Image 1 (cartoon, rainbow, N blue to C red):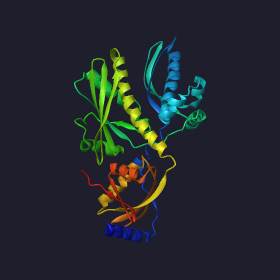
Image 2: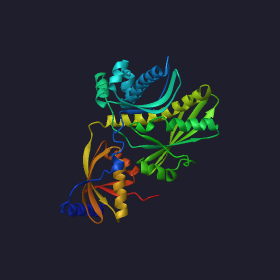
Image 3: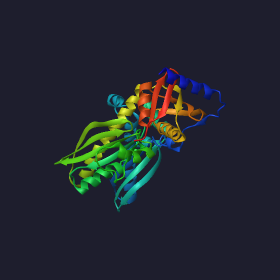
Image 4: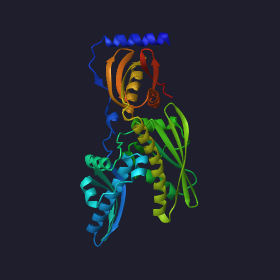
Length: 361
């Protein structure tokens, strides 16, 4: 350890002797998802009937805006606060004033009916004013994405299609922890080795496999999570009741997906609230044997910038090492665990933290 610390100290001293031009390590992938669509809600299903098509669409949009605001409120607030205070219920005129824009994602209409799926973007300041005025704490910082792998065992094709459809059309990519659906080609037992080729380009350090089963009028999904440098983890089972017909089937699948998302979102929000105000800045030396390893370290930092890390700076670069600095939320133990999931090993030394690329599997 003393020898290693001496090497790290020598590297730091040598790098500090340079006259670097600081550069940001956050690329396009790191900037995507950092709050850009936190106040947008997509995948809102609407269905209204009125005397004519125009009136039906107006009613559908008004109802959809209210549903979208309720989803946004639940997205941005802590579960304990929501249970204690109850969700605010502003009148339709107030909701209308809070809406920035509406996007029609899918629609069908007749002379008297309007059916569709819409996205609603709200004005952040208006939503924040509503929630703070009602006594809520707001969590609107995004967490690292998660790859969702919907699977099924011995179910009908109709059920399988409804299960994938719930994830593909549910708008979960806009949540605080964005949930991205894997392609149909990713199948089999939970395996990070198979999932990472899809997950890593999305900046997702983990994948959740969901095995769907249908028994009578009950549908369930077993949750298994795998990730970079972490063993597989059984996350339990979610269940829902199935209604009659295609609409009842779709509602049951959506309920399952909502339960999985809610669990992941609440875990992130509680973690952020617990670590609120604990942001610190750290300087670290990155050691590498070649440019490929240095690129992997930089790539890992970029992906981690969608999580607890921000304000990444490359202070200096030498042939086999670099000085980097960044801000983070939480403890050093959490920092080490998070960076491991992004392919970076953190070792605490007498000279400070040292970052190395985790060997690729």
